[in-house]
Structures are given as C-alpha cells and as structure tokens.
Length: 186
Image (tube, rainbow, N blue to C red):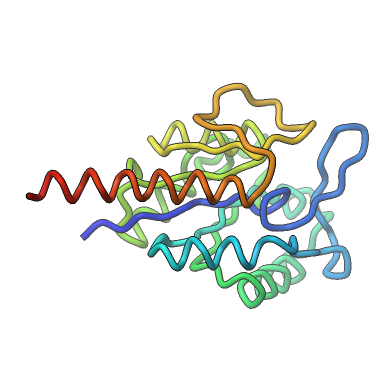
C-alpha cells in the first residue's frame, strides 16, 4: 500500500527564521534554533489525518563551514521531540555541488518515497520558498506556498499566509482524494 506524506520545509515553516533585508537565514546555533509555536499542533493535525509529516531541508551552511554537523543533529533531535515529525531529509550541500538532493531538485522527495513507500502524486509539499515548491512540482506533488516577502515564487498550486492555513488546504485535499478513492472502489 502506498502511503501519503506531507513534505514540510524546515526553516520558515516549522522553525522560525531570521529575516534581514527580505532574505531569510537559518539558525546556526542551538540557542537560536526555535521551533515555531504553531508547528506542534499543526503537525498533530496532519498525523491525526493519517498523513506522514516529513521534513526536507537544504542546509548549505554545513558545506560552507558555518554550521557544525553535530549542532545540526541536535537541532533535528529537538525538532523530532517537539513536533513529532516522521523523518528528516537533509541536503548539506551548496549550489556548486550539483547534487540531486539540493532543492529545487527533487532528490530528497524521491529518497523519502523509496524509504517510506510513498505515492508522490498523492503527496503534498508545504514550503516558504520557490526552491521548495519547484522540488515538489518536479516530483509531481501538490504544492502549498507559505507566502513570505522572500518567497520568490509564482508557481505554487496554492498560496497561504500561515501554517494553519496550509494544513487546512492539505487536509481538504486529503479528504477530497479519500472521497474520490472511496467512490472509485465501489
């Protein structure tokens, strides 16, 4: 049986990000790493609907030497404990690495699909930047953009202002797909 997942970007979606001059920056220390106050209840709503919440995140600061991999592991341990995500996929590379996992490429989504037995066409992506949305589109997922001043995206399937609204859209899509599946199986 193929499972359905919601792929969630980390920074700007589940974790507070620093914005300067309309540019977003990820936390580089454990002290600056703050899980958004809405993350836990919204991820709980996804889990209650039997959707697998999976984080996929670019962390080029590792390749650039400004984020210690051990600190990143601790950040993700905190995220798992606070929010109860099913898995976290990380691209630690910078743009010059030409890897398949760095968003906007869909490598992390394909890796998650292989690991978790996911039907990517039935999955959704929630992100706050064009890279997240483009990765989702390339993998065949329905995409929801959390609109931010730095998003730089005009290709999302839906645009919303908050994580709560994004989860509302995801749950409506999931219910719609479930209803369609039920009527086809009759």
